[in-house]
Length: 292
Ligand SMILES: O=c1[nH]c(=O)c2nn[nH]c2[nH]1
Image (tube, rainbow, N blue to C red):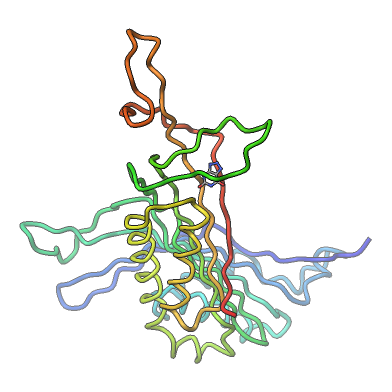
């Protein structure tokens, strides 16, 4: 047998950075995973640890670089952090840096943004996966865990009808999903190129979130498939430095409940008001749209 793939490092490194601009403070909370690749096979195959940068040292480095470097946008921090390992250790050829940014929104007190108080208004995450190599930097940015629901404006009809089909066609259903949207950037030649694009990362995240909300809300959706494709097209247009956009949307079903058994109560179709939210099974619809 031979070692066909290897990467190692530290996962779940929780880092918090507090930055002061006069009286106004900003906070950033991250969870970082940093995995290294390179000439490390001897540490696996012949128990030679000489090529191993200890995962504890990787963790230490993450804290030092969070102090030295800007932590926002996370795409730039991930790139600079990854590049450090390539610059410092000639035998390391790839740094995979994945970062989750947790949401701290500035509190509004008496109608005014508070200088140093924040609240966690939702589970949605902004994430980045950066693969820093000696040939270039590939970055994927994501918006994840954004739970949305619309109480109408969603349809599903015209699908295969055969001996396996029981689903009733509908022109008016509840649609709920947990948005997982990812946009892959065109390869950056180096950190300097990422730095040049720094403003594009926040803009892309804000645009992706706005496009997702607006399309989800306004389109009378013929299916999850059709709606997510429209989102992808618009994000590609909004972020020219991206190469592709992907969505993965669970269809979190809310089933109508037939209550006619009780005194003929009408609660289906146009009379539906009480629904049964389903934990599972759920649809899962995925797509990738690439700039041609
Ligand atoms: O939007 C939908 N897409 C599908 O493919 C599907 N299948 N069942 N319900 C569905 N809803």
